Image 1 (cartoon, rainbow, N blue to C red):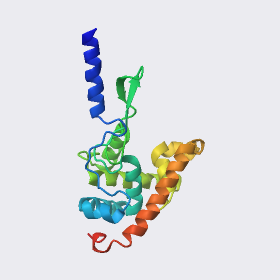
Image 2 (spheres, one colour):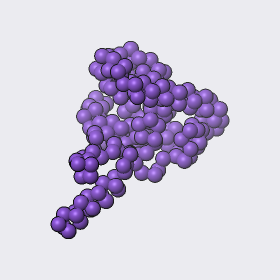
Image 3 (cartoon, helix red, strand yellow):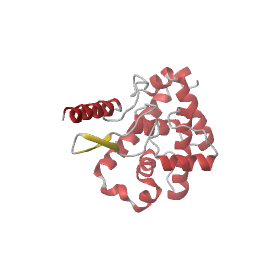
Length: 201
């Protein structure tokens, strides 16, 4: 009996190390509500966003707003664990990982389609490039403007087929979240327009 209890405590301890609500590291920028602060603290982020914007024409503020929503800019963010009987971890809710929270299958599709076999979800440049690639597919398949953060997020969350079927319309929480993504994108856009030298980095 003691061995069983000890094993369960060990399992719970390991699970808690993975992070209960996101499992990300603490390498995110300090002030996530200010785009200028983000790019000043993490100039490599701005370089990654700019590169994705040049390649895919997705605005920097849209990329930043979606990354904020998906991972809060944590490089190794993961979904929380699922538990059996409320205490025994039985795996995470999905295979999502990294800044973009891309699923295993979608990431592999991206790697094959772009020839980016060595791309990693925990790398900001690769994550931004993935988002640019995915959002362009949304534009082509679903007719969603690359500037439309709200509808791009619907398609990002529910997939291209789900978006075309309107699955998001029956998810009040997702409609709310997509509205928050749109609001944050607009805020980031206004802030970036006044970043001065930081914005030109």
